[in-house]
Amino acid sequence: MTRSEYDDAPRIFLPGWGVGSGPLQKSLAKTRWRPMCLPGTEGGEVPATFEAARDSLLRELPKVCHLGGWSLGGILAMACAIAASERILSLFLLATTPSFICREGWNSGRPVTELQAFMRAIKQEGEAALPRFIENFCRGDVVPNAAECVRRDASPMPQAALEAGLAWLYEADLRRDVAKISCPVTLLHGGSDSLILPEASKWLADHLSSARLVLLPGRAHALFAGDDTGFLQELS
Image (tube, rainbow, N blue to C red; front, side, top):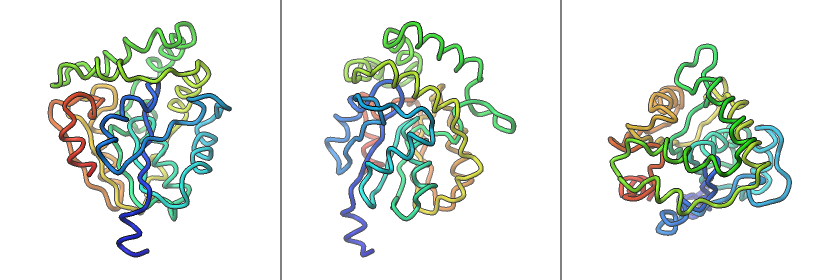
């Protein structure tokens, strides 16, 4: 592949859980990247497992592309690069982790009981629980209106997709396979992210063969929200 072909390849960005692609669209509109919804979040069949969600994305992605992702979208982007390395030219991972929950040998995730409790809340409350979730993951951000920006632009989500997405987070553990990712990787993480700890991106930087880590001081989980200068500077 020539340099021109590499630069001109499509650039696809996957959103995180629960809020859809809406919060990312304003920032991505200023770049060569375009958002792609997670499987089942705009109707249609909702994959029951993380592996099925990955395979659904691979069927929809261009033959070759640069792939970005935020949070759950970043985990799925890594899974695509592991499964089809010849198709993913580079990765841009925003607030991403190899495992969302704590597991044996992995303490940089959320407690399993916390995710289980949230899964029960979503089953009972559905989208009504999302404003609290957004407020929590934006807490401590130096951008005062970060949570407001995410809430305002969030895309409506089918109940089945909300529940399935949490099941994917419960299931996904890419620690053993990240070494298979050979493309260049940019890792961008907020220094004040309390949902996915910066230590997760630091671990990825240490275990990926070609990774560059950028920590943005004072930013929480939604690095693109509000004053997104740092996000855009790295994305361009």
